[in-house]
Length: 415
Image 1 (cartoon, rainbow, N blue to C red):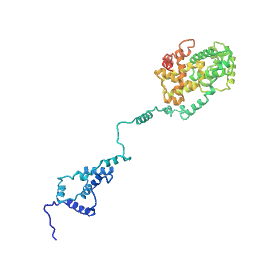
Image 2: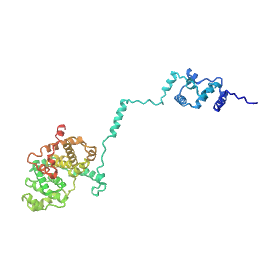
Image 3: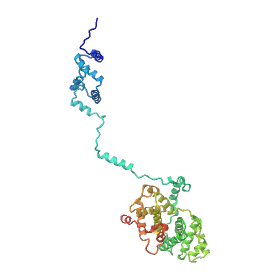
Image 4: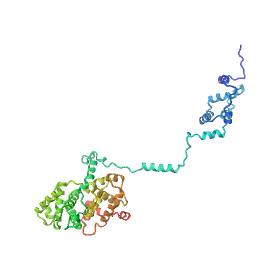
């Protein structure tokens, strides 16, 4: 049979394809099938968020698939096909988007898996959590104070922590009872000891000896007096011999015995000095290797990242402590930490004790406050009275006039 061509029908393959598709789907559709919109209006079907989103996107993008699916429920006539092809009329919105009841929205909003909307306001528990996290982020780090000395063989970076651990463990063996002056000595007292140490500070400065020599000298004196009763007239001899032994242990160039006789104004003979040297070594059992406050002072100044001013002021304060008998109750490491802390307070005008200092010293700021208060009082009275040897020593250009620094008076008032 000859095909009849309708001249009014546009020769559009797309339209023909759509008609064929409609016939094909039309055969599969039963008479009992209802439109999706009517099902939702009656509450017979549950509306899911994924269905709504797909339909919204298909409406915005003009998805071909959704348009074909909608045509199943609305057969395309010849007139409607022409309108689609010429894009003169849009498909009604009610065909693409079914009407949704309030019940459907209620079911969709109650789904627990849906993400909660973002809000700019932060609840109080969240704020507290954020503050804790920010504190952790900005927490003061502990500085590696030995990293700059890794190429210096004299710094022994590989063993320095073990060395100071050993010093902390053995420092108690070099300490004496804080009341030995009452229990062991009958002819001398605390004031006489202070006069002796103040004089030895001047002798040490005159001979230009190492710092460690002075601290070891005072340690030998206290350890000897804690075991041996000494007459008053022999006390200066004990000090001279203690310095001689410390020089032999620490110095490269050691003062000779004649020099000690000269500075004592010939109060003692050569034989007396040598005899006292034997007695002191036997009493101390030749134990000269003890950690003194100066050993810890050098380490703690490094932890404090000190400059020359802080170093000189800390040395000044700790030498003031050597003169005072009541300070022997503190461990050498504790005394060094308190001196550095007090020097920082006086130099910077505020309390300063970093996490790095606390980690290397193992002492917190609260633990150092009592000792720091005593050191500040020594600093206030350093230029007064008869015992001014330490003040005059550090009131020179060689030590940067550290004695002229203002004491940390505010620390005494607040403690």
